[in-house]
Length: 206
Image (cartoon, rainbow, N blue to C red):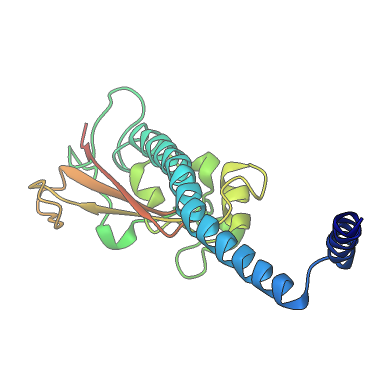
């Protein structure tokens, strides 16, 4: 009988402890352990998530740079180069190649010259016809990209780019314009993760 009473007291004591739940100390210890576990998991997964995103950014930046470079190289060497028979190049006969200081968007209004030639008087992408029209073209915001490429504003979110064009007759990348036989085109793209991607090519006078 005594053993039976002892068993009942032990059973009800254990049941009472279960009914009381966790103590404050146990809850605090549990929260600390959970916080440490979450910190470890976050530190392990966050770099992997960033690494998985980087290739996508690289693909977009590379595709953008190559497409834009192909577009530029498809244009005439110079504004003065003839785009029809007899197909004379600038530097031939009386055709004078554009001075490097004049590189950039041409003026659509022949009655205006810089600095009066601004705004709607300047060429846009649809009227660019030679490689140096792209000189100093800079896209620094989502709105710039949307306007230039006619794309949704968030298509290249966080991207920026700048294009430079210079004469480089000896093909050394430093710029040289004695005979004006080649133009060196450089595109620098800064992606949304602040990685920079460079693209360069030469356009010969032909």
